[in-house]
Length: 481
Image (cartoon, rainbow, N blue to C red; front, top):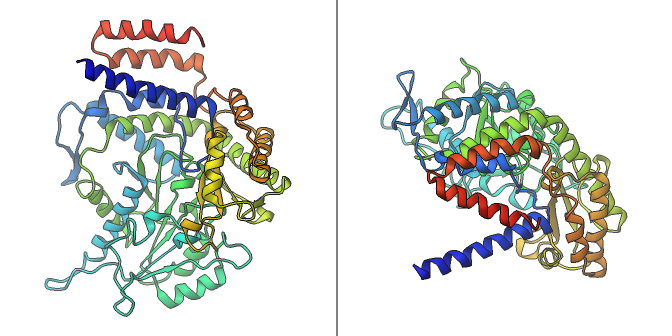
């Protein structure tokens, strides 16, 4: 028992130290991360986190294969409605547990869909050709043959490589698509699946441009938008469904307020030639890709969707203001900022800087971390590889939720510039700076959220004595605060 106690004590101390460092002392700028609200976190650890609720549509009826699922059945339906409201679309699939899984579900479903009319004896085929964003030009890993697209697209026998064509980029801005060149490539290659979306994401994607070109093709290609990084900016950045997209995928924990999950949405109407694709997406979600679909995070996502649908416009507007203010402030300090200056360097939550005249991206990311500014190094479109990355990728979404405004990002830009240009130690300044931003915004204020949090916590612990001692200890720990 003493060995168990020692191991738990050691792990607890490490958790406590890391929580304090990341949540109270660091400025968190990784674009693919966020901190959920306290209520979202508590939902995530509630009873459904250990349960199952497998279900599928059979003969027009939704059949559940476990008992005790009344809550989660209602949660899933409520969440479907909340997300449908957010996307302004009729169909949402919620069982993917990550953005990458959401993409893979769609790729699997597309392969199943194109084989629906296959005659007996005909070979099962893969997608003939896919168009996407190149990895080194900011494309997301999950949309690459080395990622989720693996094994779902045909191989070119002449080259031995998958038949994937990348969106061309402008010579004067490597973060924007060259639409005239794109028009030629579309007509030349006739892709069956077109995948928009990036992980280094500064500007809008040309969804409407492509949709207008391919809308009369027979068969029409599926237009998919992987919004993993910009899901929380749906509407203020782009509304892909209004621009002609068929499918939107994403992860729910980057710019969206949720826990780590995935989502698939569609506006494919009944009677459309693509109508059965949605049936294939549902079947590839379950049983094709999941069994248990992590019900604790599903419950947490419903709470996050409530928050997002209330605070969407206010939050999204501030994120974009902050990103542009941060980018301009860095530029004013002499830092090379990527993106089109005419668009404020960014139209999303991301700010990308080029640091090669000072050091490597990898070295600078480490120096920033040593000063409690958490980022990640990034290969820029003209870099040889990620091993020789000359960029730093930052996102303002998490610190925006903790209350930072434009003027605060201007102060932060000064600290970043001091580290880059002068190699100054600003760790103490950053720790003091972060103390001003500990109260989460765009959710219920603490005094209103606390009673709900108390109810959830009390219901989590079956042992009353354990909960009583937990509360007593919590009060003792909180006294110094």
